Amino acid sequence: MTTRTGFPTPLPKISVTFFPDDVSMLSIGAPLQARPPPPMARLPKISATSSSDSNPPSPAADASSSSAGKIRRLVLTNEGRTKLNPTPDRDFYDFPRFVTHVDDGFISALTDLYRERLKAGSEVLDLMSSWVSHLPPEVTYKWVIGHGLNAQELARNPRLDYFFVKDLNREQELQFASCSFDAVVCAVSVQYLQWPEKVFSEVFRILKPGGVFIVSFSNRLFYEKAISAWRDGSDYSRIQLVVQYFQSVDGFTQPEIIKKLPKQFDNSLLGGIMSSIGASSGTDPFYAVIAYRNFKPVYEEVQ
Ligand SMILES: C[S@@+](CC[C@H](N)C(=O)[O-])C[C@H]1O[C@@H](n2cnc3c(N)ncnc32)[C@H](O)[C@@H]1O
Image (cartoon, rainbow, N blue to C red):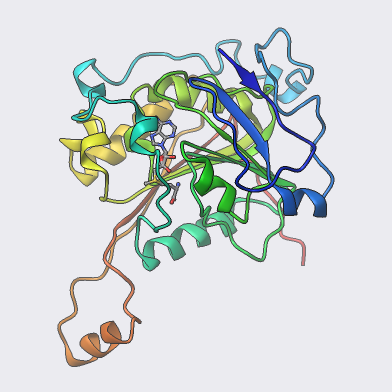
């Protein structure tokens, strides 16, 4: 496997080199100039294993069971992992899609959730990202690293300080030291993972104790690229699937489920007017499943 790292020297936004089957870690110009780069020792780890990490788990992590992060059981059957379109995912995402995959109501619910759960100054990984991260614009994080399959989309994302391209259906290892992130988010993409148990286990490993993993989704999908267990399910069974992904890894807290269903179609005169001026709340249901590594921190409100 070829692995390249590309920072802290800023690169032009679209100057991207691809290496088949690799991890391409790139820096994005503007944000990097505005802020100091993250410590090199921590990002990225090229061969991240627990024994060689330069940042060993903190005492809080050691306090958890030694099986923490291990996969307890596989959730999906081999059949459940299949896709109608079996061609490499990188081919499917070869050209950039500068669109939003869900409506404004969904995006606003997601941004509110991030506002509530992600503390300013956090180190954030946006897994399966694109040209948008839906993070609240007024909040400053220490840095946001983006991952996805299309470098042009990621290079256009104004929230990212760094990004890398990696096909998680070919390899699930994340090239970061254990306990690197306060938060990992994955928006409207979990349905494309064929080995979610391994990816969730990796997310557990790279989260700091008390770090949060937020997985959000609606009922939209690239049908041919979603796994069969998702495609053939209902909204309810999809929520349960993501809950089980979390539960398949030892050490995540009990998953919380957040649901925001759109109001029934409003065919009143007022409803019609609101819709025609773009003031209706949208029709995409919003679902998020959230769990923490080891424990959910309690933050005191400072008045
Ligand atoms: C529907 S888009 C969502 C993008 C972004 N999170 C958003 O909210 O707009 C699905 C994303 O999943 C990512 N993706 C799909 N298959 C993948 C794979 N096998 N490995 C890594 N990422 C993948 C792609 O990069 C794509 O941008």
